[in-house]
View (cartoon, rainbow, N blue to C red):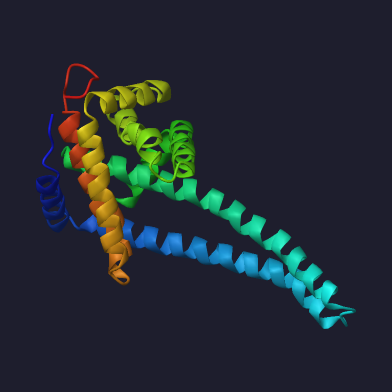
Length: 242
C-alpha cells in the first residue's frame, strides 16, 4: 500500500484546525514540562559542581595541580548527574507522547476528543507495556546511533507503530512488537515515508521560536495516527497491515 504522505500532512493540519482544544492544552503542558525538567537537570548539575568547586576555591590553593584536581572532581560529579537525569527524562517524555498519540488515534477514529485526562488514562492503563516498548525503542535508537545514525532505520524504525498496534488491536507487548516488525517488512515504504516527513517537520518547527516547539507534538501525533490508520485499517479482520 502506497501512502500519499503530503496529503496526509494536509489532513493532519486540517484536523488540528477543526479540533484545537485538547491539543493546545497538551502542547502547552509538554512544552512547560520538558523545559522545566531540562532546566532542573542543568541547575542540579551546576549546583553539584559548585558544591565541590566553591569550597575548594575559597581555600588557599597550594598549586595549579590543586585547581586541576578541583575541576576533575567537579566533572566527576556533574557529568554523571546530568547524564543520568537525561536518561530518566527521555523515557518519561517518550511515554507521555505515547499516551497522547493513542488518545489522538481515538480522536481520529471518532471515539472522543483529546484531553489531558484521557492521555493520563492511557498511560496508567498499561504502564508496564508502555515502559517495555519505550525502553526497547530507545535502546534500538541508541544502537542505531552507534552506526552513524544510519542504523536507526534498521533498528528503531520497524517498531515505529508498536505502541499504536498494542493499543488499537488490544494485544500483548510481544505480539505488538511482532506485528510491528511484520508490518514494517510488508510495507517499509510507508514507514520510511512517515518517518522522513516527521523528521523534516521536527527540524522545521524547531527553528520557529516558541510556537514551533509547542506545535511539534500535535502535528507529529495527528499525522502519525492518520498514517497508521491508513496502513492498519480500522475494523480489519486480521492483525496484518493493509
